[in-house]
Image (tube, rainbow, N blue to C red):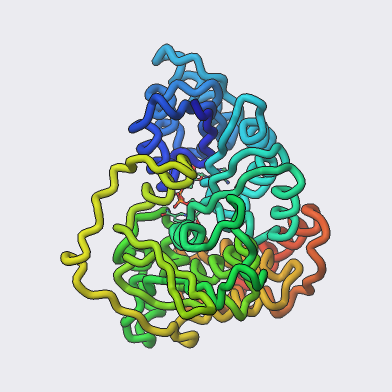
Length: 397
Ligand code: NDP
Ligand code: MG
């Protein structure tokens, strides 16, 4: 029996994770669940999965959850705040942690799971983007197992060689990897006239052609910052230099990514676009379990297309490559500025094409240095947020 904490249980990934877990009650038990403000959804999950512990964002939310659980006769211990999140991610009773909080808020608990040597199912790419080296160091020091949930990285993981049960680094010549081919759907605005992009609404930006996801990552997919963050994520997960990561637009989202080898072979992982596949893969790894996802019917898909990304249409992708090459705290600045800009766009404070301007301003004006400690990363994250807010306040929409 694997005991699991699901951080971000009420989100898109959290709900899909619980869907897979519910299909295998003999294999998985839920130890703890977390949400931020969707208390009623979390209460319903507690009624169904009976976790020992649940964590929310504020004292008021905790009171509300405790009252709902009392009324339902559920005996789950309720707490709130970052320390409580770190505690459910690192408790001795936990085997695996699904890290599915969105944004920088996931950093502390995901890092706590890494330091405690847990099996980490990583969806929260922002945590790795912010603190890549420190995070990977924590994983190696504690012996934690890090399995990628992001569909592309899960596909790469499945397409990489394994030496003695371990995936070698891309930069290790014995791996024989020429390039990682990171596929991207191109999002909802792949073919839309660029001149009209300033007028798009949050609902249009969140209407992804293939995937159903939370609003922040949906906007990131529309700007292709999501792919930019994934390039940085791939760099850390697979020890891949920027020059060995290539983004390929593949609008059907059937090939979830590929690994191109020096002998000319290309290995890929395919499937219907449903996050329950990578979630089930990581939960059961190295075994396989049913996920509820329909088998892929290639005759139904019929056509697979590929093209190069247009960096002028998607300036956020170029910004992410620049931040990766700059190194140090540059990716943390990029990530924080992006989070603030995306929220401002969702709140109708800025237009879609101003998202990249905010990020460009922050990464160009703030000094970035070495990411030698988590405190340094968090300080840079905070400074970037202030700079982004100030710039947004000065922008006439
Ligand atoms: P959602 O917005 O759907 O869910 C986010 C979850 O995090 C919710 O449970 C939310 O709680 C919680 N949360 C939000 N803010 C905070 C905070 N400040 N502190 C603690 N918890 C918080 O996001 P997704 O599920 O789409 O994405 C989660 C992560 O997975 C992201 O990092 C994303 O990039 C990554 N990912 C997602 C994919 C997808 O298909 N959705 C694919 C690949 C990666 P509440 O509900 O109460 O607000
Ligand atoms: Mg992805």
